[in-house]
Image (cartoon, rainbow, N blue to C red; front, side, top):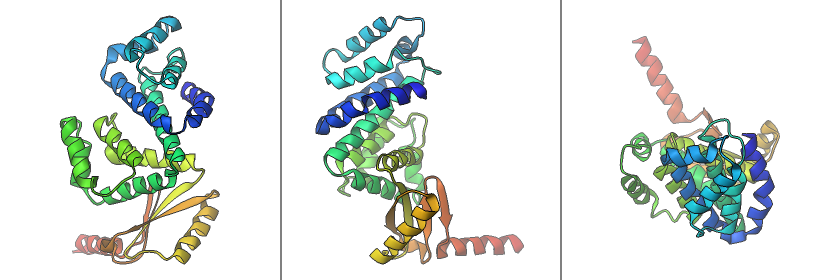
Length: 269
């Protein structure tokens, strides 16, 4: 979306310069995203091309009731007068800004890499837990029940506060996405933000530093840009390696080969 991109490019320096204040801004923008997703009248009012921009800005101020951070107000004031191809695009733009704010908070607290790794680890873990994935994505279940489940599963893992807040947003307001899909979107945003690509490598035993260095060389050359290797250990793969880059997965593990062999034998019987 050009309108979204233009706003984010123009306001990124201000957002970045706010340091740890971006946590509050991100929280406020997540609240606005949720409001737009669940109040069609407000969303239509803010995107109606026939409505004067001044009226839209006044509505934003009324919604925020003079309690939001000035930069939150400025971001919304910049977004509402723009032309949107679809009504729902403005909520997407606000959500993008909210995640951007959380990324800048991670930058300010020297935890950007840690958050990106934790998101990748969460994604990798959930690949093997289809029932849990389904429950976290069930928008017919009460929000509190989904959040309680998230906290029960991941609450003791000492995740960075940014990682947990992004996961909470994905669970509380799925926005017509599956939980795993939202995690992948967040991973992609963080890796682009860092100027790298995340490559998740799953093996039965931990990789050595020499192996990680070699994988960095291989995939940096293959993708034509810097990569970060997220090493994930899963004894169930038995041996070999599963590599995930974005949504693409190459599974050369022993477990995958055995599964393929079983299917072949079953088919031929």
